[in-house]
Image 1: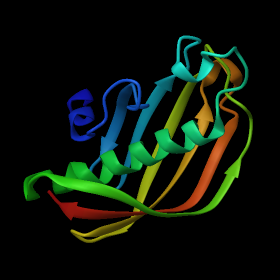
Image 2 (image 1 turned 120 degrees about the horizontal axis):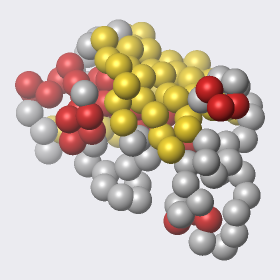
Image 3 (image 1 turned 120 degrees about the vertical axis):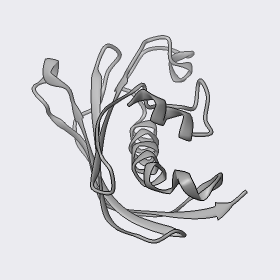
Length: 142
């Protein structure tokens, strides 16, 4: 399943998804990210992991779910069109493993609407860190 990560154009340090855990094509995808104290965002010191990076990791998870179905259509650039209904919860810290889940609501070859959530993994009891009601992605052929 980790071969799905090649669908993202990002490399280190902007690919924020470390591993795909499960995928039900066209339905949902679950991935994890490991928060390390060596992340570039900690160059000035340790603190909570930036919430915007949790959001970016969830968007990358959503893009993986959509792109897994569209791979046969050839290379494409995925653009973020909108995020609606984002609610942040517990802050992630270095050492946390966060679990991202994206669910496909509707899709065409050119746009997708997804929902998602990010939880702090078992060592913190599966506490919600982020919930997004709607992620809208657009696709442009390259």
